[in-house]
Amino acid sequence: MPLCEHDATEIRRPHKSRLGESLLRLSQNLDQTRTAEQRALDQFQKWQERWSDRRDQISRRLELIDRQLESLVQDRRPQLSVVAHVHEDEQAVLMHPSGG
Image 1 (tube, one colour):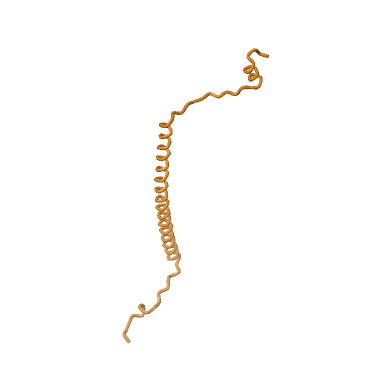
Image 2 (cartoon, one colour):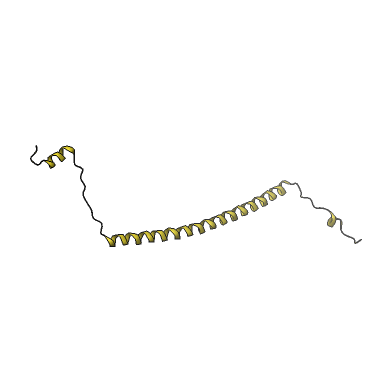
């Protein structure tokens, strides 16, 4: 059996000091923060990809609407009309120009 130092075979246990506990908490918080940041970056990238697809889709639809409107205008020019509402007593005068 080979000789080895006593420290090499001893199982290392974390020291329970306030500084050690603080460093451990800081390390865990740093890991959690990095994980959360990476997750947020991944979600943001996915959102950008979806928005890019949507933006292209909206752009194509607007171009189609513009072409449809142009074809409607070329087929017939829009005409404005004035429509008036005639009251019953005015309608009677219009139907009987003599007034009676």
